Image (cartoon, rainbow, N blue to C red; front, side, top):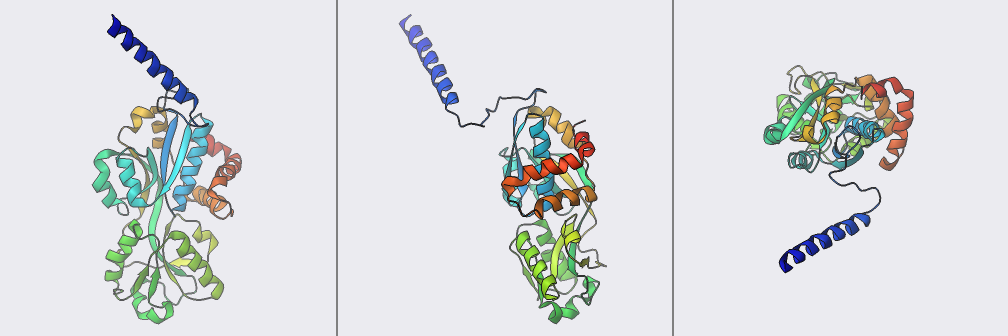
Length: 302
């Protein structure tokens, strides 16, 4: 009887301690068991690829949409490799910017058993090697002969990006560019050099992709790829952790039905990236954009 009393007392103390800890939780935090009205878990964590502006736009949009439905969506920005690793381990719930069948093929092959592909939301994607519009060439086949014009360098993006691998491993060897420098650092750094070259009137080669707001902001042209080294056009997919549908059955249906054409995406990208605002201010910009595209935004959760 004394043992039983001790056990019940311990249980009572444990419950009281848990209640006290809960009361001390920071404002805005949610427990893993908290749900929204439709039964989905409340807290969702999306990972966003650093420097991929279409990912920023789509993710910020879905954060706004889901938060309006009562979810608590967190966006974590990360490089591509750790993003997929974290997603496969359940550290993240979803990523909205998987390019298939080429760019992120290696990551899906490595982690795909622990992920679910909800399908493509944009089918107008492509990898590009791009130059200023008045450059003296129109094709990758002519690039090697104009090394002096471009300083023998291609300005790339992040070292771990799929686009970087494709250009380094396929494009440069296919077109005799092995002696050229592929300069990698970040997408913002590449865009900064592109902007500077336009101001200076100098020739430049960059790695770029469609859809991207840079095509609206700069006077550029994509080089023809007669050997197909950049691969065929791609589609942009939503990929989630393996048990996403158990935690978010309704949100999974919405995300699986998600579609966004490039013109709509350009509009949101431009509103965000060229606003001069910090990421902390993006939700206010999305709210304004949503008001101007209300029918489209409403359709995402129908």
